[in-house]
Length: 250
Image (cartoon, rainbow, N blue to C red; front, side, top):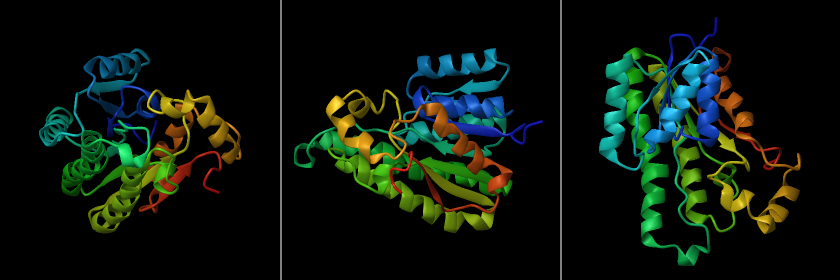
């Protein structure tokens, strides 16, 4: 019997990539996963695949950059499933790839609304549910860019640095309520979200030599870190940011 049996795990940005991989692995370990993103079609496909493999999954749409949508998501999860044991903030926006001086204001707004405001508010909302339960885990998807700013990814990198700081603040202030808060820092991963890098030969020639393992990761290689941080094996771990990066930050 898995230690995640009877647990409700909410994952934002779960229609593809790292979020989808996380959802499948938690479901395989007995959790009831709530997969969420803006794409109803995408999360329906993920939930259907999980159920076809014998797992439990619920699909609920949410625009992580909109306050009302975040509030509705948390309300629906609690109404339908009664609790939230694990929140994984994984939704992200990176609408601009280019020189910092040429970034448009709309792209700035979107990046901040989703990556900073969205993570902060979603953590508050789920954290209030967890406070009533006297237990819970929040895991934020940050990035190695939060430690070493990515070229042509200025505000995205700054937003990921903010998530690292946010993780530490929530960890300190929520520990008294039985809530642990940690972050995962993925390195270069083969996803559609990262295609501006993974499909760019010039960028790969610049980045891959900086990765000691010499390759990009697959989404399935990220997911075990989330399972560990949510597990009883990590019961004394809070406030950490765990790089899964092939040695990039070493």
